[in-house]
Length: 249
View 1 (cartoon, one colour):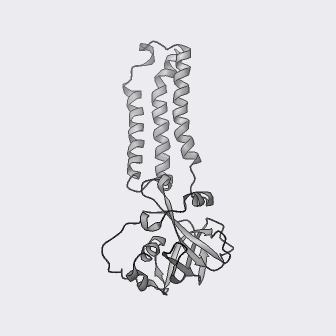
View 2 (cartoon, rainbow, N blue to C red; view 1 turned 120 degrees about the horizontal axis):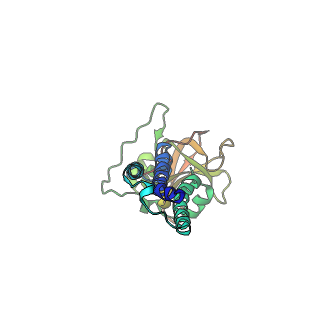
View 3 (tube, rainbow, N blue to C red; view 1 turned 90 degrees about the horizontal axis):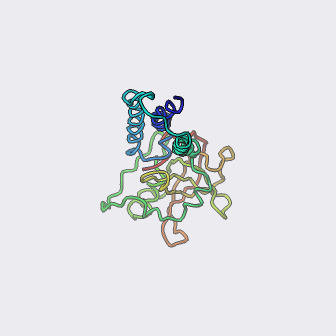
């Protein structure tokens, strides 16, 4: 009888555990570090579907006494298989990093930002407007795209801009650092860094890959590969909390 009861509750326990894990990842916002916003509602839908399936199984499946109990060896095999399925999902969610490390940045650098960002045939530069602080708020992707077009380069050259991202050192360069944002297309697995080099000393209060806001005039210079790249001359920097949306899309 005990074996029959265990087998009866095996399926709803597995479905419920998987659904609860997905629901927890969605409610706590963890899914925001793993998936593009357009895909996140499917996580909620999957969680609700799994929990509903678990409930329906409990309500509609035949009671244990009406089914023959499986052999102990077969039941142990089934329980072991189900445990591995649940452990794989819940373990993956528990161990998934909440942020990218400097190692991830080093492994993913090298792609040309111009190939990652959407291109447009409209040559008219956007109307960059300064805010109340006198700086133009931009993203690292804005500056990477601006470096690809003469009109946008001229529109921003020498203007004070403000951007935020994760702080990373520039290999082999003292007195400079990078502000990095990761650009996500589908999920964390395909996220690629888009960085802007900053001339100036990195603030001591910000650890590597910590979040920082910087401002200063931006200049577009010829890079090592013969392409224009944005370089910000640091005027001010401060540590900031990680934003709700850590990725650019």
